[in-house]
Length: 371
Image (cartoon, rainbow, N blue to C red; front, side):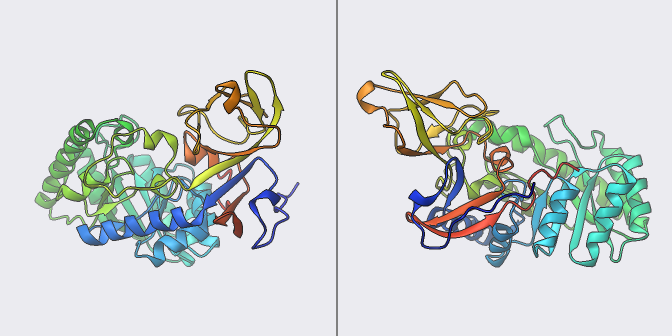
């Protein structure tokens, strides 16, 4: 069944939105986009925001209009959705194996500049094969494990060998080094995050020197996320940053102690929910596990520190607090999700509000793009 578009028009009041629904405060979103664009410009680094956060070509094009060089994503399907929506530069910051998937990626070069990461001989061999049929060259980045213990080459000599093969391959351009430390993003203090990124920068410096010894120049060193981007920007090693969640600022990122060098970002993404049942000591809302992700912990209730979320099930969540503070039947609240990326992936539409009025309705273009 095709996703039903919300029956709303610009100017409709927030009360017309059926709950649960994914909503965005446009004023807060725009302030976040501008703040990051200003930061990148002031620090002389390229901005390539991560599209896996919003999965929206509308938001991606707004980021590029403010100076972003392109977007990141994690899956070929996400890249296809973004390019179909008019995004003209996409880097898949992930490993992709499989000839069918890589053929799909190669086809996208007809409409956009496309990049991808590699960390294995097999992955590179399959990419070279796909690039032979690509309308335009593909940017291939060597992914270096800089401490996350996930994807990426471990030995410097192996990374050099991959880069040399990319340089010699028809249909490919050596894009540079992908050095993202995902696990560092949620270390709570700036000191912990700096220690992790200092290690990452050291690894990159070692690889850049080894490549220079082989006569291979590195055009881009890319990485960084919402939790650590000021550190990469100040490192003298990275010249491109990839923050994603700054556009929305979920509850988990808000739990970090802020970096003094970072702009302050506002919560802009919420799950609009309503009370569907009441007891003397709790209220039940209509936003459960099918409306927001709890993999990074429970949401908080915007503007209501006197309430706490508890006991999620598929269609229900429980709000607890003092009896006098509990919301009434049909009362509406805004949840700040614990993790914005998978929460967005649960919804077909984002309803953008200006104040308490509907301004725009955006499709979640990359929803469910698993391949």
